[in-house]
Image (cartoon, rainbow, N blue to C red):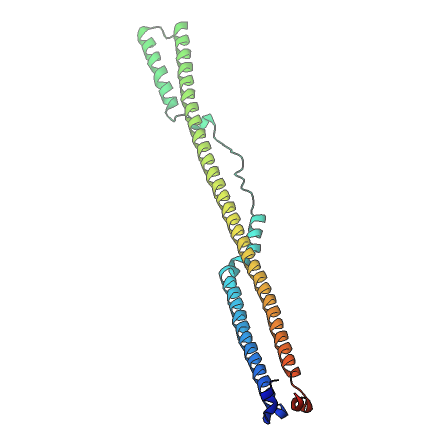
Length: 233
């Protein structure tokens, strides 16, 4: 305390010192209030950040179990075994017998006109012709049978490939969706972790601000002197 302050009658009762302490405490309180306002604003921003992350990724993250269940329960595609019920007899021409009959009738008529119907050559020629025509008709029927079977196999293979492709597409789709849901879960989890970390840091800052305020006020109040001490300086 200066010599002039000792001569100030008002300060003999510590009035000026009380005023200074009150102003210092008021300034400390104002700083604490400002820090509290900043803390509240920060907390609101932290909450807005968490809400934004939840609104952006929450719905997708919540579907993780559904996508995982879809993959786990998806049945493996099985096209089955190729089967074909047709046979060569199904492909004989309806006109085959008529053609054979016409050919043998022609031989018969020719032999009859020549007067040799009862010769062994006639019978051999007739049998050979019948056998040749029957073999020819069988070859044609077999070709048609193989063409039809090949067509059926081709259709089976095409359908099997399409079915397998559809199965693979669904697997890929569910796998992609599961990956997106997993990433969304990570984003939400990380956002929540950041939110908690920010709150913890803000709590520490608030606690330190209150401690600093309390220490400041306590220090200011301790600077006050008793009435005798004020009078004597």
